[in-house]
Length: 116
Image (cartoon, rainbow, N blue to C red; front, top):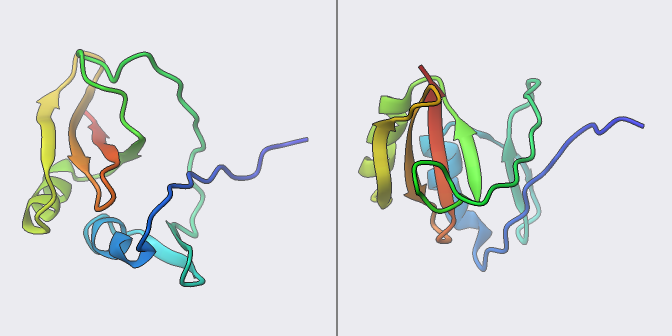
């Protein structure tokens, strides 16, 4: 047996509110839309990971989701322009990533990062 995909599912009273954050700012594709569920992702192959943590590193809370991007400054600018609340960073962490934490439209804490 081989795991083929891992999907993070979050309860959201208005799934359409995810579009600005996940599609317009982060550039994910809308892969499925049934009204009651919207799935964003990429049709290209991505690395699958599941993490379990007692803290988020550097004394931060554990984020609900981590998203690696190729241009952290562009992601930060897009989040600010979209009116999303930056809760930590941006900062260079001792383990080799630059990151910031932001709240998505549903209050989920998202760790946006790039390897340096």
